[in-house]
Length: 235
Image (cartoon, rainbow, N blue to C red; front, side):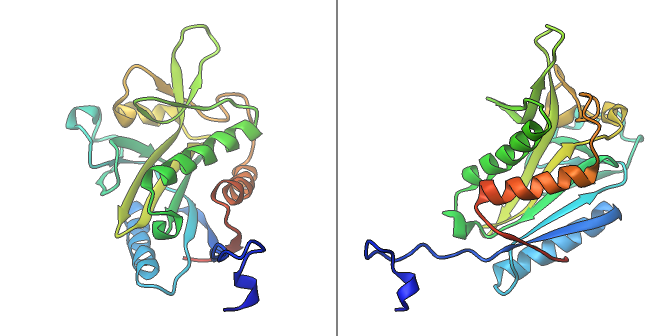
């Protein structure tokens, strides 16, 4: 065994994970094309040879329905195209100004722990929001990341959503973080089945930052939370 595979305590060293390919798509990507690309990449990771990847994109305005979606939560099915998808969760919106992160990762290299993976995606969004002086939090029984309104109403608004799928321990789909989307576009659905709260964004909270700034913060915090280096890549 090579000397660099033994720790000073005489125990086998923890394997060094390969860098994650960090991929940025310019422009608006149609949802069916995204699904096809994710499926292909996940298969390549699962069969070996391809690195884990994070893909940052924006979609044209559309709604997606997850595996737990309720038809009654689609309030206006004519507003935008609606896509059935295999990810977990309920109805959600994607559109310009929202950063969607698709995370394709072999979870066998992270203890085959799906809950940890989801927790880390939440942490990624929480720490990114905190970088811009926005306090975002988890809520028991409510998927996503939430911001308390400062009007004393006790109501909260969602700034980040999560919906993942894992097939043979390889993840795909991921998260959606509201930078500056048209928040009126959420009116065609009950977002994630939660009617009593709303949605917000960095810009709605007075944080006039660019998507490029948010992307760089995401990348830095991803390396911290997931303890993985990143390299520029393409899908």
